[in-house]
Amino acid sequence: MFNVILKGHNFEYEVGELLKAFGILDFSFVLKDFGDVDNYNHHSFLINELKGNDTKYIVRTKIIEDGSIVGSKQAEYNLNYIKGNIEKRKEIKRLIKLNIYDTLVKADYESLPWGILTGIRPAKIVHEMLDRNFTIDDIKDILKTRYRLSDDKIQLVMGIAMREREYIYPIKKDLISLYISIPFCPTRCIYCSFPSNPIKSKGNKVDDYLNSLHKEIVETGKLIRDLGKKVENIYIGGGTPTTLSSEQLRYLIAKIFDSFDTTQLKEFTVEAGRPDTIDEDKLIVLKNNGVDRISINPQTMNKNTLKTIGRIHTVEDIERTYYKAREIGFRTINMDIIIGLPNEGINEINHTLEKIEKLSPENLTVHTLAIKKSSELKQSIDEYRIKEDLVVDMLKLARRYSEKMGLFPYYMYRQKYMVGNLENTGYCKVGHECIYNMQIMEEKQTIIALGAGGVSKIVYPRENRLERVPNVKNVDEYINRVDEMIDRKKLQLCRT
Image 1 (tube, rainbow, N blue to C red):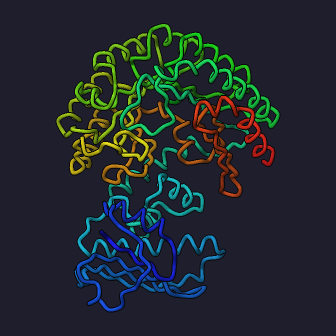
Image 2 (image 1 turned 180 degrees about the vertical axis):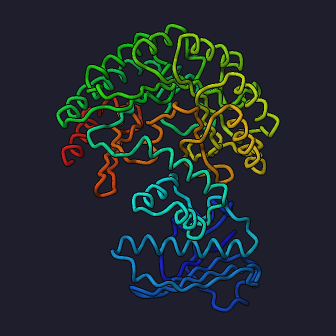
Image 3 (image 1 turned 120 degrees about the vertical axis):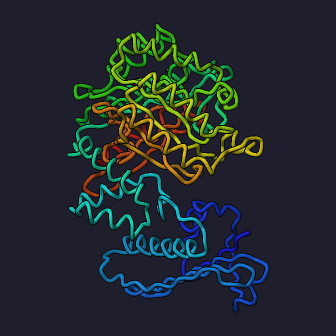
């Protein structure tokens, strides 16, 4: 047990997230100060103290194990150059995290590739500095000295941010993206924490759900048209949208085009996802109704792992579905894999990547396993072997294969509880970037989300802020409260 004492501040959340990133999961915040070091015997302590006034602050950290100081650091900072209490508070948080980080590294904890960053969108920091006309060299130096990023992660996030700017700038206030949630799946994967409902037990809800969704599409479409906004990108996700029938998919897409102004539409993506939900008729419906991007997501190409994670399809099903989609003529096919799945090591990942290299998709999204609280995996983690010590090597292998396939990283994000505190990276061939993925990550464009679990993000570019407007996650609640979901959007959008 790690006992944490904070003095002069109460930033427990920020300190706790940093400790988790170091793999320190068994810790508790305590209020009692035991005084002299001699009184800290037989326990491990981290003591962080903030002292100061409006301009000058002192931050000090001590790590004590069995009555001995194994790491300590003290630093003094002048913050008179920062205007505004909000910005000053953000800077104080950063300085506290930096001081704790350096002290932990000094106490022989392994440095983290992402340094003190615990948020999910590292590229946003780069974009903010580019917007303020920082030079590339200055940004790299700041990432290293102020956030402690490794050289490898600096190179990754800088490259991605520079590629993203071609697609998300200049910001066009009259364009939005549209997300449609289909929260049904054939089965629930053991790592899943999304609002997904197994179709066998919830199939009787699909028609009622679609009726409510169609209503939200129509009413929100009227509002968006009245505001003079057009749709640039459409993304139908879930769940697994292709659990719907061909006719349900056709009608849903028609409802979207009838309700929104799509004269500026650049891309239309559907997560086909699970090959056991896809047939030729559905693929033809998607292709003939304007969908130019689909995802066929194996997660792994190892049959034993597919069974372990709750998939009911085979590797052969994945390959057969991929080739059928290619034959029908989709411009861009994405495939997802997950690094760190139970019982998988280098050999298993290499096998998966060899199979995908032969298929040669335009996009490959490499996820690092995130063990979420609401997932089956979290509840039964002791039953599985997660090879965390190999994850960094697995990611490097995925990057090498991507380079061989002519794919480059174009967007990335991080999640809480990721194995190795690493990242998810999207790779693509030139000209096959998914604009929606970049917009959802960098939050420079308003995204209207419809359906259960959807979270709309209304962007205010001049103020560099956004407002989230969530829909309820539960399918039954959504069906019964769809009018409320519509009114929530109206209330927020009418303020813009």
